[in-house]
Length: 264
Image (cartoon, rainbow, N blue to C red; front, side, top):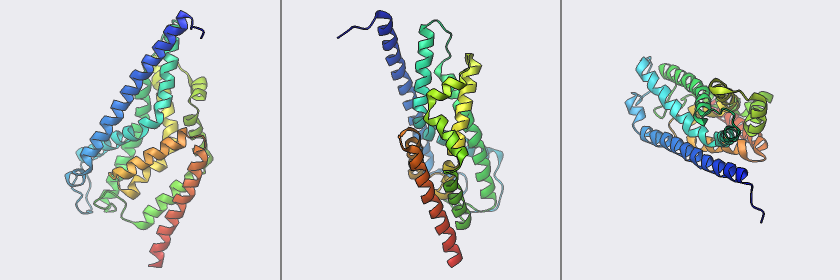
């Protein structure tokens, strides 16, 4: 068996060590997010005064709490599926550092990615607050109108087939292609790359995340199912086909919900 040159051996050892450190960091980050959601799942409805739908506006403090909940939820759901991209960024950065090129910490790229999802989380919190003010949410934080819920399912199902969805998904499924065209130098460059990749992920997954309004925002089973589906869609070889077939099921489910309302 041919031994690796010393320089290559050092590089491979450094890459393995960095990979383990990044994986451990991502695991801890996602684990803390899931633990926080589990802690909130039971007391959240009562804490926010949602024992019954009621027409009143939420305070800034309550809406801020909702935004924090959504941010943590996005971290828990998206970190697993973006891990391959983060690990690739870490590997590229390590190689550049060994070659004497200035490299940026992985945390900067991750921060940029999470900033994109923070924008979505704040918007989702504002929408949830508006739905609550209009008494359209159940005590489980789910849309109380079958027509509105069915319409959201139809929208999510149709979106799975749109070219824009496919374009965003392609960036998520091909991180090497993303970095080959979007690479930027320095801290600001890494932050911008994180924001841009996060924006593609938001464009890919926003409708799926919105389905939490149908199942219940703090329904942890649905949170886990959607997170698992996003992971499959991004990393499985036939993920795009699976996503489209799921879109048909979602749209069919939504049509059934709306049809049941008209029949009754």
